[in-house]
Image 1: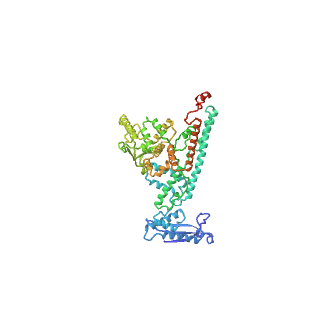
Image 2: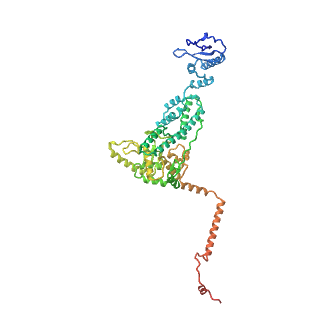
Image 3: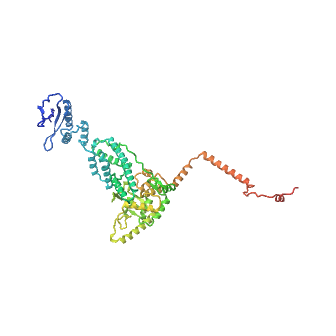
Length: 545
């Protein structure tokens, strides 16, 4: 195919505005003109011609080098490979249109042999849209991905070319997020201070009303209250990007995943702490929780269950407290998978909250599909609840909604997980007990099982964890008396000479104390001495021989 280099003068006639071309009087000057190249490309399928053209070269040598580069790229496809020839031709045509640098020959050869896209102009935004459209997961998971992409990834790195995304770009992105957090905190503090100041201005009086109006206008101009992007959210953003780039590698679009190597602040998961008497006292004084994750003692759990004994959903609180079901699992548990005769239930579905809407879904993980054994008391509680539900069904008649779920609203319709959480928080507040979340009731069930000496594997299976390490990592805290017993049992295993000597010294001291007491009380009979008068003493003395 034809290709050539040529000189070009860009001077124009001042009157007509047309290029002078060969008629330019300065054309023969050494450094006046620039060089250009043109290379014919394979024709399109419809027979139309196409070519690569570019100019601006300062020397003939530079122009010839690029022309040779183009010809080397065209030579990568074998003569009997029309598909490869078309891919390279389309790549060079786009390079010409976009005036982008010529791709490296060896990199293009590798991409061609690997079946990857030769045109690396796919942006991060374009790829993320394509990736998200191809995901086949539950709606709540898709929404979480979509939020990460829309709020964080697209605004910061969406315009970058996918194949040129680097670790440094992602480090800059997370630095920007941290900087934005600082600005959000400052904006929130200013807005809060302005609101507090306005609250001190009286409503009555013309001047006060005018002042309040001006202050309210100033507050309206401030940024609204916003939430910061915490460590857990940043980790999820990183995980979303890493998953999408891994799929891009799987489709041979890129070869390197920078999200795997970027370092961000680790997430410190809060450990579950038990509401001991000391922590309860401090909470009563300050209103502060020692940890976001708090667990009731057995006595506190029993007090709560006694307090809510007459609540319509008592059976659900009881089931979560003893068997550790998740909120969505309890709300979505069907009667068809609840066998009270065999004292077991099978967790096979759940209700998931998406925004404020709810939908039925599979368990959270594969290990979420599990059989949970039920104790006699829990079975009795569920039987009584089933009888009460039967009465409600008769009461509602044709208006009853038959969902088949164990726990429902009064008309049989689905329970809303968010409303269940709100109800639980109101009940806890009314009980006067230290606060815990509904999910902490599940944590309490795990802690109780571990405190009862149940094998960690059984506890993990009951909770639906995929690995016993998760159970160990989450539930490091144990009830205080269990920890004390374990400490005493451990200490008794180690014989210490110091302890032996201390025991001997204690026995010797006790013996000395006993002897001293016997001396003070007479002949050691334990009776105190009496004061005897001289006359009585003489009366009882034996006469001398």
